[in-house]
Every structure is written in structure tokens, then in C-alpha cells.
Length: 225
Ligand code: CTP
Ligand code: CA
Image (cartoon, rainbow, N blue to C red; front, side, top):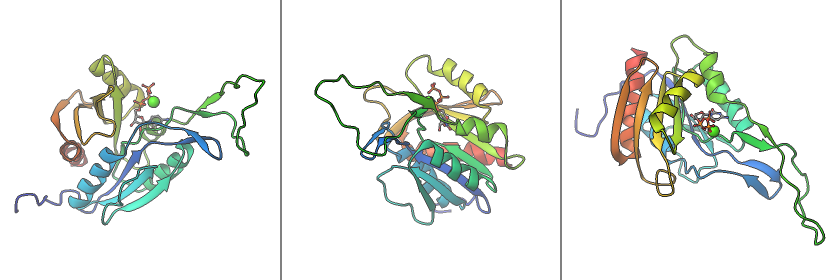
């Protein structure tokens, strides 16, 4: 094979990738959101397509071009993302949850724009928990042998927190990266360790998000056998 042309080791496979960050609306003009750009998830989708997979990309608020040959399902909130991921995962060989899913959403959605009042302090925003999509799909696999991959951005005790999270979520692989002011969010490059439920640890050197994507699919392909 020519350099840069991947062996189609995911041919005949259906993979689902979630990307971007959910937005949880407060009123028609405001939301609680996060800094995820979607770049890592889009790199995963492009890479899987190049390796021959049928790809469903569940995309939350990413301002990125649709990857060629990929089925893109746009979503806004965590609840919408859950619906789309569960639907696509029903016949998937692997699901990679690269999206930053909001842990909480406003308890109340104001149908009209929230207005300030001169004589009043602002009301606190009450929050309720969102469903944990990764834990749900990992705990109740749609197909036997389905490979489930999570992502975790940590600021402290990266590996210890990652191990604990992998166990708690029940996924097969967890990509752990360290985040901070100038790390990862919106960046073109990434550095990570991929933890396996089998105890494996695969470091991925600082480099383009495409390189991390290839390593993730290498590890997924191994587990698909
Ligand atoms: N995730 C999810 N549903 C949620 C929250 C997170 O599916 N409601 C997924 C993310 O897509 C990611 C993984 O879980 O693949 C880890 O997300 P993270 O925020 O690191 O984990 P949490 O369990 O929410 O832990 P924390 O309290 O550190 O935010
Ligand atoms: Ca979280």
C-alpha cells in the first residue's frame, strides 16, 4: 500500500463517534456550554472512514465541515445526543464517545427570554443531572463484543483518575488527556494515554489529533478481532 493509504481494517464495520460539546438551554437565547471544538471527534470519524468503516458522527454544536462519506447527525443537548447515540449504537461494532457531554442542565427552561430587573439580584440557576450516555451504553451493550471507548479530560492525578473513571464507566478503553488553560481545547494537537480495561496503557505522544485517532482505531480493531 502507498504511504498514507490505510489498510481498510474497519471495512464492513459500523462505528459511531460522538463529537463536540452539548449546549443546555436556559432560555431561547442562552445556554450552558463547554469549550469542546469537536476536532478530535471529527478526526476520529475521518480516520474510521478512511479505514473502510461506515461511520455515524453524532455532532454536538461543532462548527466543522462534514467529513466526506460520513453520516452526520446533528444534536444540541445531552438528552438529544443520548437519543442519537443509542439509535446509532443498536447495530454498531464500536462507539467512541469523544463528545463533551454536560453533566447538568438547567432544571427549568424559560420559554421567554430571562429579563433583568433593576431592583432585584439575579436568581440562582438550579441544575439537574443529565443521563450518563457512556455508562449506559457500556453497561448494557447493544451487541455482544461491541467495543466502547470513552474520553476523559483531567486536570489533576490524570492516570489515577482515569483508571477509576474507566472502571466506573465500564468501557473497554478510556483516552485520558490532561487539560488546562492552553491544553487540548480547540488545539490542533493532543497528547494522551489510552487505558484499557485489560490493564493496558498506550501512551500517545504529543501530536496531531489524527495520530491519536489512528491509535484509538488500532486498539479498537485489535479488540474487534
Ligand atoms: N459522558 C457521557 N455522558 C455524560 C457525561 C460524560 O457519555 N453525561 C462521557 C463523555 O463523552 C466521555 C466520558 O463520559 O467519553 C467521560 O466524561 P467525563 O466528563 O470525563 O466523566 P464524568 O463521569 O462526567 O466525570 P467528571 O465528574 O470528571 O466530569
Ligand atoms: Ca463530566
